[in-house]
Length: 130
Image (cartoon, rainbow, N blue to C red; front, side, top):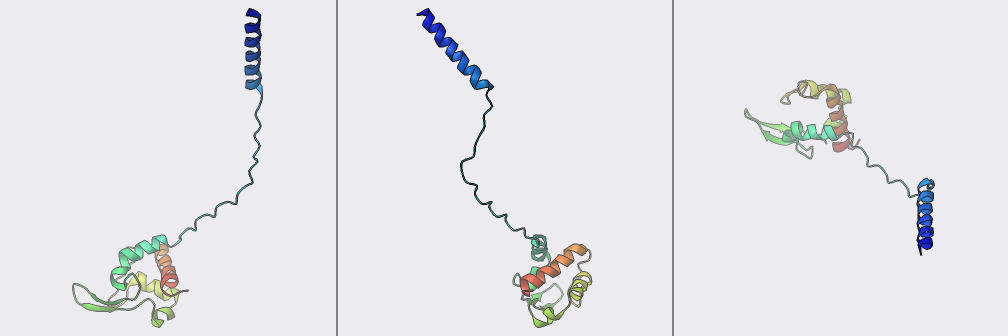
């Protein structure tokens, strides 16, 4: 009986030693799946936030503009979708946002040059389909 127990203990010890010294190699038997497409980055997200914060109160979320009451008077805000707005060059829109025009306030102290350029891109894309 002692001999059997000794043989069993030696076998168990041998199996443990062998298992601990072998390097395991893993094989990937599953077929690689197509990488999930990355979500598109919204490069105009900041411009959308700025539009909601600084522009939508007059031009509306839709860009349609319309009558707006200010503390001084009621003004008719032009639509960003109009042919007149579409005919403006990017440089003209940039200047208008930077310096203001008629009742529109200047945003040069609220937006950087990059933010203004992104706002022009947003207007072109979201409201004018360009």
